[in-house]
Length: 457
Ligand code: ADP
Image (cartoon, rainbow, N blue to C red):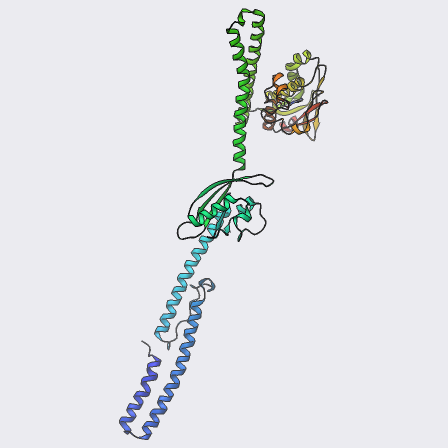
């Protein structure tokens, strides 16, 4: 153990004085020498105290330094205690170093955890905010900014400032002060009219405040509505012919059979309605197969003139019945890349509509050509035309401009929807231009056939 300087400074002068008194007895010389020795040791003590104070304040300074401010505690240990230093001071220094080391390790762990948490939060599709007990936002993730369409500060804001919905504000208040969780759904009045499903919960444990998770369910709600509308439409469409069939059958049963003239008419109607029913079911099945990608299209080079003339043959009888001229003007060498049966179906649906919605004595033409390396076919008619406000919607399932007229003509409201799906599956598209009472032109665009020398190579 090293000699302790402060003990030496006190004991040495006492020993000197004792020896002097023993040797010289009680006289003035001994007193002077003792006094000067004591004075010397007093000065030594003052100096030692000063050193000790400096050293302690150094250690205190070091102790106050936050662990992360120490560059790398493990690699830069405190300078080794000097030989003369008090063991207690050295021990204090070692203890402080060990404490720093532990704090630095803990701190590094916390920093790592905080970074991981931030990365996880920012990687989430759901928006998240955390509030303090007053309901002021203290933290949020990136997704929340997008959901609130906010470019300003979110931290420091209250729920009511960010989303003007009292119910959300109340939910945050309940979570902060009553520890209650709330689920709510808000439809925002912004341009996108989005629907957000929000869950607000208290932070829990000893933590005051609340957390809210925002989930954008706009698409989900839209799909639910589309599904509900579809089911409602299908039921309605099926009910109409079924009601007619049942009604006429009952009338026949209750005596109309006895009148052959009336009975024949009624059986005709029953037959027509049952055909309509089967067309509807066929179209529905076709559409459902297309949507679920069950239909396997076989893409090949299809001569469009052949496809157009087959489709025209199928409607020629109907066109003749209405004295509608049907002209085909498709170059024989025009070939598209598509599914043969699918293309015929597309052209048939368009031609069938053209004939259906063109009054007696009108004109329907099919012209083909190429545009920007793609095949183009126009199906034009001189029919009733379509008002501009309906144009964007006529490709939707069951959308009809004039419900009564479509049904009278035997339409299912699914023809154009099937056209759009079929062309989409073949890498093509359909467009429409129309003027009420002047006619319509439906244009289909398809990839051109692969040139034969390219396919050979
Ligand atoms: P529908 O079976 O009712 O004809 P579609 O899906 O084929 O159903 O067409 C949707 C609607 O678009 C039709 O109800 C009709 O109002 C309109 N339409 C389609 N083709 C034409 C056309 N050539 N001329 C005028 N209106 C048309």
